[in-house]
Amino acid sequence: MLRKTQTIAIILSAALAIGFAGCANTSVVATVGGREVPAGEFILAQMDQINNATEKFKEEYPDVNTEAEIFDYYEYNLENIPFRDYVNQKAIDQIKISVAYEKKFDEMGLVLDPDTESAAKSDIRSYWDAESADLQQFGLTEKSWGEYFEKRGIGEKSYEGMQINLLKREQVFEAIYGEGGTEAVSEDDIAREFETDFARARILQMPKTDVNSEDMTDDELSALNTRALGYVSDLESGKAFNQIQEEYNSFLEQEDRRLNPENYYDETPISETEGLIGGDISAEDGATESAGEALSSGEEITIDSGDGNDYEILFTRESVDYGEEVTARLFELSDGGAAVVETDTDIFVIQRLDISQRVDWADARRSEILHSLKDSEMEEKMKAESENIPVVFNDAAIRRYEPKNLL
View (cartoon, rainbow, N blue to C red):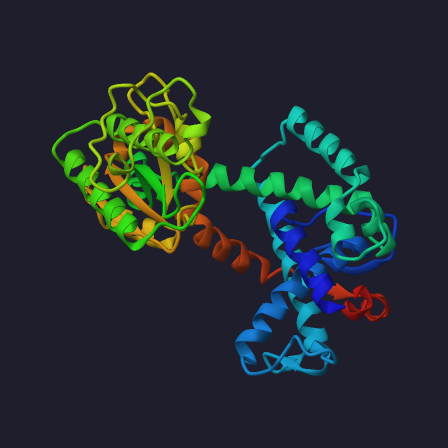
């Protein structure tokens, strides 16, 4: 049962980006910094921290089989305190940080944009009532997240409060590190981070199967690898990537004609000797497949844009769309460099380009870059401020809202 709740906590953490503030018409669990914390807010924090605690458990007890049928985290200690107390303490710590953000928001004289707040509340209302397939997937009977939360003592106002707190957190962050902020990050630092942690690439993906999805023979794979090396040589000699793409698309069409002549009634069949091995393939007839069919999706792709940026994909160091091997090799290349990367299923031709020319990409990811640079620092700031916030517990409420009761 815990694993089910743990999975739901992961969904909440990723999809809802939980922060906490607000109130619900329920019992008060504690008073934090002079603000009463309703049970709904506390339970949301518990759900989030159950997930964190189970991950921490794996670090402390790497040899314990948590998948055993009869296993109970609550029989163990974490950081020398009972699992239950660890979850509750971390939940309160998380709420304290939320209160610290609320105080910082007020101290800085910030105000939420009314339209932004109204839109957020409208989204929350829709989310609360909408049916979710995720719940049924995990064997739960509730049809909507609202129903799920309410059965566990979490009111819509508590959920709404956490989302509004999230908006305030972001506004505080921007007021400190954004343009014109009290500790604004320089444009040079943003550009440097973008050029270090992102890569601009063109990718040609060539499957190790033929046009009929049959595994290639060793000779065919060798020929495909030779073709890929030839493409790399052409790119390094200044040939346009679009031409390489068109040549490969033309090759695929010829292979289809050779292997499936019945699909081509008015064309002269291609002989068995003009195919993959030793064929003289040109692109004079143009590409017949769209680039979208020949390329897998990456984090961002620009195809036939008319601005000279065709077939481009934005990579981060964590990108896995094409496999870790492709990403690792890409970041080893210098601007303009090209290489062949082979995985279990594909042979790739990759080319790295000068990312500083894509100012549009940098602008679109400015907030993401700021957070990459300053999230850890911001977290430490707010953690330090939260440590001095007093907490008065309602012991009866703490006993009532046991983390284990959420399972």
